[in-house]
Image 1 (cartoon, rainbow, N blue to C red):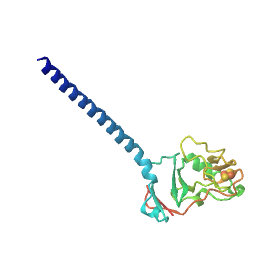
Image 2: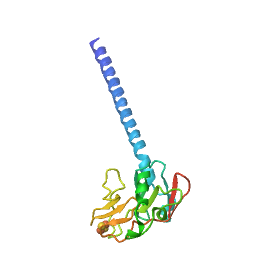
Image 3: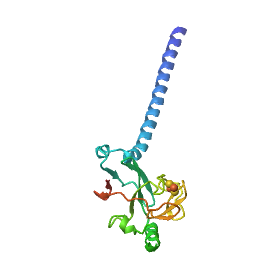
Image 4: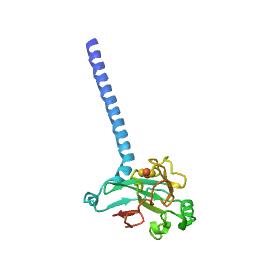
Length: 187
Ligand code: FES
């Protein structure tokens, strides 16, 4: 009888262990799925399409970039900043006397008509090629609220125009075209 009880207990314990294992495995699986779901949109934005493999152009889904946010992606092996300017940042950029700029350009000349809030530039400082700060959340944006290059202290404004420091020119705007309200093709 004692043997039977022990066997039953062993079976029960084994079954309990299996249940616990399953619960643990299930929890890990759900955690894994959650992590994948969280990371996927970020990875997806940087995922090279067939076009980028040919180094020709990329298509980027910008639907998740809210006003005041920016993302970094890459095109032709160079960093690209895509920034959704706030109304205040647009006003600030338009309030600048262009004639006083080192590299005179209006925000309108650097963006697409009707989509002046979308500022798309190379993330490459025009001084010696460092990647400026300001596109990622929490990064400093410099004295003019755009981008700041920490290598030698170049400050870019909200239209990514050079305002202070050694860089000779504005951050370059690559050729781009909006395929829809939420997809932009660069290159
Ligand atoms: S490389 Fe940016 S300031 Fe020198």
